Length: 501
Image 1 (cartoon, rainbow, N blue to C red):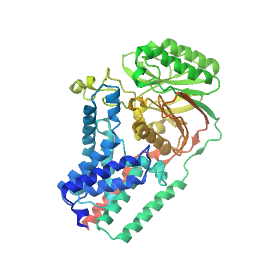
Image 2 (cartoon, rainbow, N blue to C red):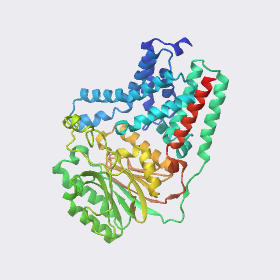
Image 3 (spheres, rainbow, N blue to C red):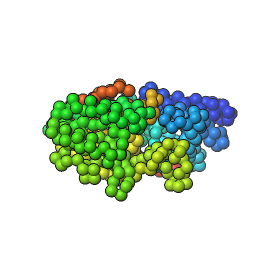
Image 4 (cartoon, helix red, strand yellow):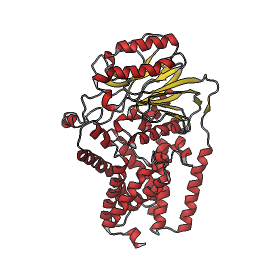
């Protein structure tokens, strides 16, 4: 087909824009995972068009459609809580999409530069550009195709190769669809190879790397969803309301639950300002035999401020600087700190950022609650699979735990995408995941990434369940992303060797 190989530039951009936009529907809350392959085929088609100029413009158009629809929730916090005009918020989303498009443009440039159109080589290049998207300027690995496949028949790849491995599958499969469309390869051999790829991918679901650890005692956990509206959360006039809400939710579970978990920055004040409240909770939990993990804002002795979580109810009484805690490592750019120091300091007013937070260590000790290890990640950092994996390898934790406050993004699709990415961590590492969120989505996810229990969004409730940890290790837990990087390197080497023959 001449159109498939060399379309008019305007037509190519329109088609690419639409195919990019539909990709958003492959993710939660829509979960039409088949659309990931269709949308991705649009990217590969655009990026590998014969005319380089057309390829770059079409790739850019695809990226704008994909990211403007997929991360439109960014505008919600700016308009509803930052007082930013709607038009300005949409401009910000567009500029973010333009930045993220750079990595897809690089994908197109490299595929043209090295004259590679083999789907496995394209998947290897895309793995590299997605790696860059996940680390440059602290990274923003949102909307990676692999996450959309968590409920697909091919999800068994994740415990081996991680979310990147599932993305690799999407690129390979979509690449062959495009080759058939462009008539660049014979249909039957390509379909046969696709059948093999899909069969092997499907077969991974029958591999069991972890099992329930029957030797360990069951753990009763209660996840508290306070449902404090973001507009009133930091209003001093509503401080007592927030405290009273959590008090009413916690008290009935003391002595009945092993571990009670509250969301990110549950009490809206610096930790050193609420010492009386925390001491009271600490004493109550110790008396009743429960332990409490609560999100706080912690200022250390060096006057560094951290997004933190502290453990109450241990044998030793609560101490501001001595109690067991976790400090968030991966901070949100323009949300928790302004990057590039004084250069962009003027943006504090635009993004209502009162202060820069400090980073916790990349690798931290597990939080030990009721003789169980918890691998903790606060909010945004659960999307960084490498960080969670390396901490899990170091800690050998029994459970993954993430606390968050997604109230910033209202009823948009953002919290659902965030939750989907958290679920992937459980599947990759073969560990149950607990998620306590201020307005939702509060849930318990099993070691296969499946939701066991979940609270409705925007309700004031407590989710209580009895859990058992797993034993065994997934390949991803042991080797992280190095397996998919190694596979990508092998594919590139073989592709270059074949091209030279």
